[in-house]
Length: 533
Image 1 (cartoon, rainbow, N blue to C red):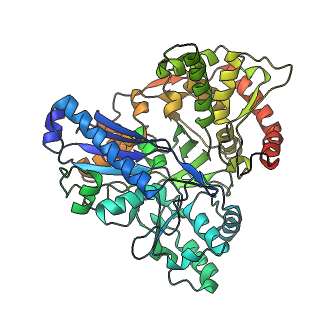
Image 2 (image 1 turned 135 degrees about the vertical axis):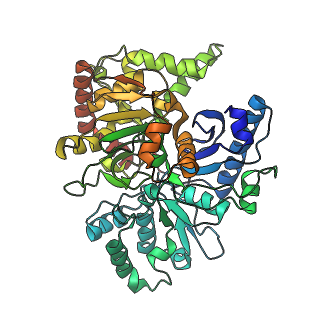
Image 3 (image 1 turned 45 degrees about the horizontal axis):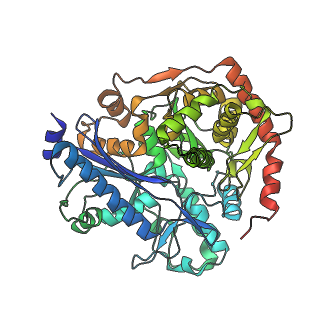
């Protein structure tokens, strides 16, 4: 069936993902091939010490992204879509959005980027004997309680970004299990929040006299393929301001960008893993069994189907790198050179491969925000060198690419070296892998493991959301998500694989020795106070 016929017959699936710097929509046909896309650029803001987006940012961005998709469909196929087979909503994971009974947001959206819940995270770690990262919703809730914030007693519902959007589109207060695991620990056997931990938390906060119990204010947990509601008439108007979109379209459970990344890289099978590298970087490995103990550097989440996943998540990846690329663009434009950004990125990335394997003694920290893996509540982007360092363009670019994986590597080393976690396949996706062979080789050297990148890697999490939506309506009776992806999406698409290079592995390890030893420099930059508001 042609793409146009798929659209006319409502055999398509639409995925929309709220990334940190871009909202993207991808439409797939019934063969799960992308046939149209749309986008909207946005950026979080630091307001009163909180990284946030406003509700206006969310809805203006979603509506503009959707209209951009519609224009692409009309431009390619001469039709304006009025319906789809299914829709999937995704967003950056975790964070804190509390609402009262009237549906009013009680405090500005606190995104995953905020490292402001250290006290709560530490106390919950000991209460549950389970790692509770600072960006998790339960850490934000408990920190608000510890801070004595007035809004807590008014809470009727707390949720993440994609579950909020899904709620407004469908009226359903639900969340896919992958990001539900970023709100509160998940029991992978029960496919629900850990009951004993819920009880412990309720007992912990009983003295405060709140009118709610924890499970009453959390979204219902769903696994991939389950019924998550349909687009309501009000939701259709919210998504499509033109009024042409028809209600009644089924939606799949909303998922975080980790879950859609797993789907987009076919990494839902045990002993598979993927690395997403964009504004943040995270590596996820589907485990065969529980880890021997909790680690503060490792998050325990799940696949969209509910299987246990270990995640090494770093808050910072390409923001500082993008800043340097922007500086080179400005330099070129000062000389009257009209710069193609794709060519600029490709040229500078490839230049990095000419550098010394150890970056010539250079050092960089890309900490735009705090970095929990290395113990920072705030960040200061830094570039450091000694008089003896080999300071040239190739080493400069290689350093800025290496540091994108620095904090993540700290967490991965725990999985591989201490827990002996086995990985048969590691796939890369996200903006850092767009230049062929560069980010892929650096990652292979960083983790000393073969890394594959598929041709579809650039489609990212929005495509993963579309695949989860497609699974919702196209799966056969009893067909698992793993089988659906293997047989109906990725069959015959193995991607390209690069092996780690001996010199590259040695050089990255030398860089990591310097990276670890130099953390005191970053600490001094944060504590000096010269950049305080």
